[in-house]
Length: 123
Image (cartoon, rainbow, N blue to C red; front, top):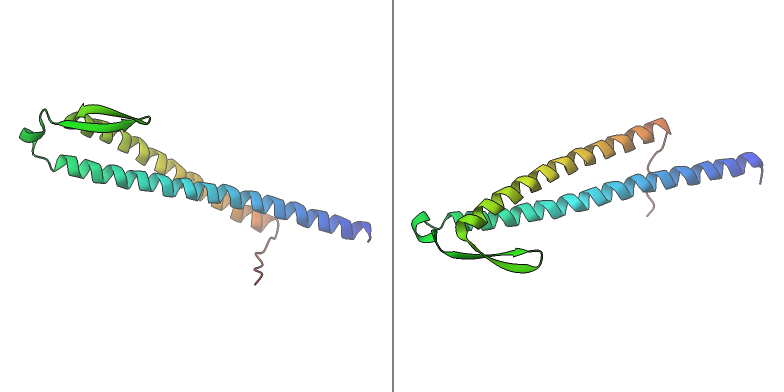
């Protein structure tokens, strides 16, 4: 095997490793995004259910919320306020993840273009 052949194989292996790293990052971001989207949906369901309770009947009504694995006794209005704060934080985090995912995909595409990398599928 000539030196140039070995160099070509080494370059191909390096490009494959870099591509795999991009794919791992993108897959992890997508997974985090799915998880946060699910949490947002859960928060919205609970918030909707609690807000459907008439104000006069929920005034001193007990409500339980899981905090760090511990069930905590709160009022319905306290839980609604907590849910709004958490929902706001989750939406902010989701937006940041979406931006990071878009940025990572653009970086991968730019890297592929600069290195003349083409995707080859094997059956």
